[in-house]
Amino acid sequence: MREIAMAVVAAVILVGPARAEEPTPDSGGGRYVFSTQSSGVLRLDTQSGAVSLCRQEAVGWVCQAAPDDRALFEREIARLQSENVALKRMLLAHNLALPPGATPEAPAAQNPPSLHLPSDAEIDRMATFVGELWQRFVDTVARVQKQMFNKS
Image (cartoon, rainbow, N blue to C red; front, side, top):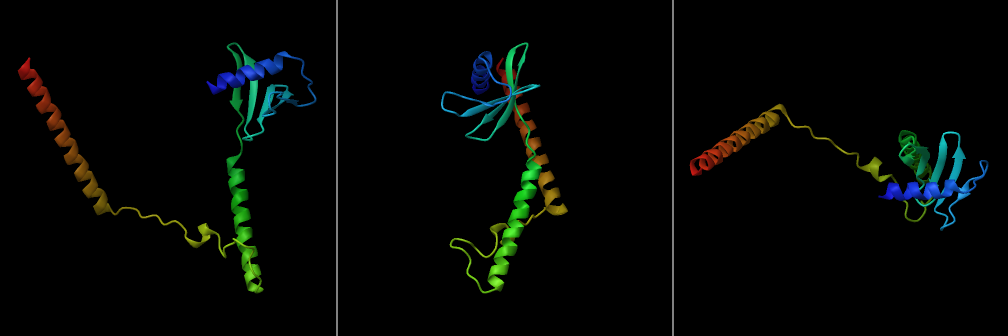
């Protein structure tokens, strides 16, 4: 439903005159900014930051979310976190106080997640349990079918 509403908004904006060089703001509150491109119209949601490429197709206007490079963001976040930890260590090494609310280490650096994998014996016990459970289920289904057959 939301996609239909977005497509209608894009269609209404695109039907009117639009300048190719300038983004066209949404006059109903300024949530969306549109920019004409050779392959369609880019729509920027100024509240969420989501970018979509809208274009006219046989079924009407279609908007698809533009992919962002999440890996790039994750690398930058990791770099900034490690830089933050290094700067905190430098401040502490020079006997300087950390800013209010700052902790000496990033929480992720203090408590790295640990992963406990099951042993082969635990896996074998689980496989045996699941096998027995499955057999009980099959027996129950067979018993119910037999009761249903005898009632008919």
